[in-house]
Image (tube, rainbow, N blue to C red):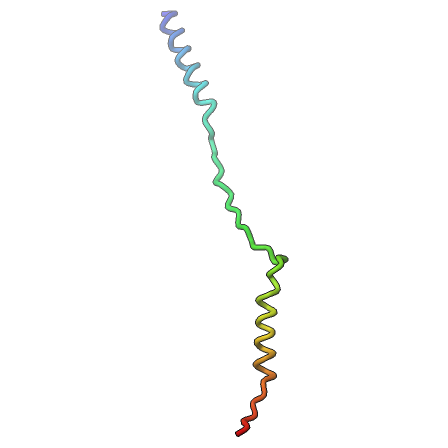
Length: 66
């Protein structure tokens, strides 16, 4: 009877140790969104081109000489 009880206790101790290392909650991975830098050396080129196009369009001479 003692050997059966000892075997049962050894089995439960092994199962308890195996369950002790399992994670209960695994948090989801954090999603990181990388935003482009606005202070780059070429960041001013597109707004400058838009301003130049608008300036040329608005100040153009519309007179028809013929």
